[in-house]
Length: 242
Image (cartoon, rainbow, N blue to C red; front, side):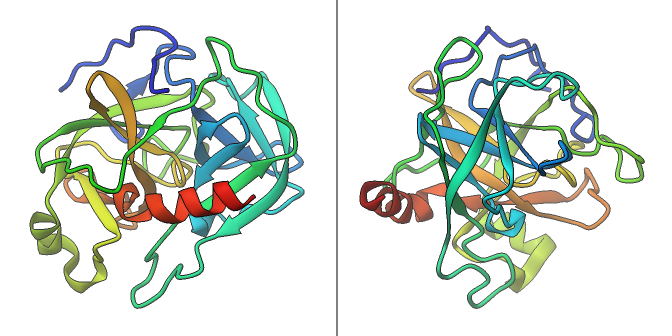
């Protein structure tokens, strides 16, 4: 898991102010689409039968999971949703708490250079503030854009500690959340559910799931992600039982 499709080129320097990704370089990125082909959220392939995304994306069985896609105008591997598992404590205590859902695919993904799983952070992993990570998606590149981009965008951004992030969001932030950005780059609408990945021993590892942020996708404010280390045990439980 966690192997790039192609060695990516990214200035660890637009999503908002990111750049177009090298095609197929992030092979776990999926596009969640309505049956009419409209992209509404991102997600990450964690193994051949399962995709993880945000609970607020509200995936349903008629929706489609598109794997191995770069340019959304060309549909790649298109799989139906068999079953959806939303975290039972989604929105518990604070809005968007435990913002995670698992999607079981109706048929197994065919793995190739364009389609392969991301590694998933373990419960005991500690990833310090300041770590440079990457988020990817087909979300808006400007908060006032009329349309989302057709080609996958990527952006490098630093993790924040929750203490740093509370300066922006106060008590809206729970321990099941992790922040990144405030560095002139951000995720935005349409990126939701997609990956925040950091390198761990050379492998790209899912640390966050795009969840929420400032309404105008302000690149001077951090974006908030579901914290995978706190949700890994639930993921394992659902995948093992189903």
